Length: 112
Image (tube, rainbow, N blue to C red):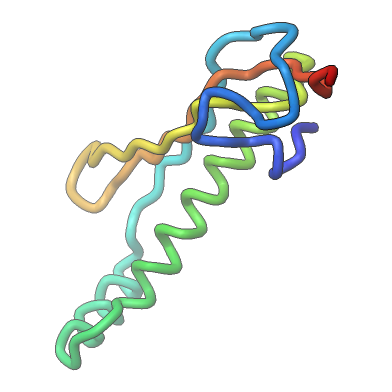
């Protein structure tokens, strides 16, 4: 399993050097809004501010995609993911794909 602190948007991990590249890994989650969630969010828009129902859904979906990505990296034998990014695509109205992806690598402490 890849520790969360060994996942970075950078292309290196300070204090470590890459010894092996396993290639691209990804975690994909497709979510839809429920009718009740959409109604609740509609009510929240009337008072303004953060629409917590959608914020929570987005955060949970990104978290799930992230976890799938690091599981994929671990299955390949990686102990880190570099160049990590998120992407989202609306597949159809109310249905969104969230993709977490990066490069799975093996790192070792850099020699001094």
